[in-house]
Length: 119
Image (cartoon, rainbow, N blue to C red; front, side, top):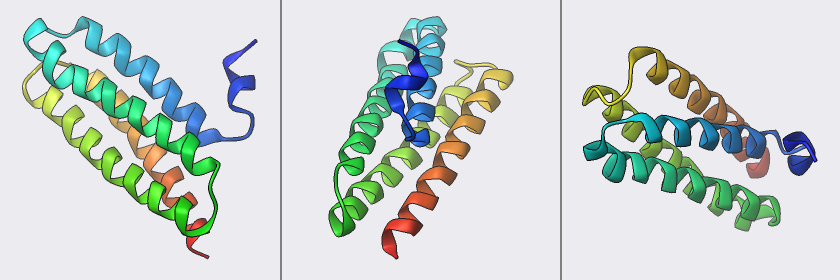
């Protein structure tokens, strides 16, 4: 079974899963002093976001909105942690921009889902 079939039509979940694969590879290559602190935190938050997206998909109305707002906060924290990885020179410019682009795309999709849920 291909990855695409696991996620059906939930594009944000697919993008977040692919981000996890990317951050996992990235973390495995950074210095040990950062790998087991900030790197591990990035991986854990990404997994929490993925979990919450599945949870939100199974809810409706206000329940979904509350979960999506939690995801939004976690996504902002994750963006700050990726920036910190860059600032402490644990990742290259190129990798930082790759990760940031993916997070921005996930953030836009999340914003759209939040907006739709509010209506």
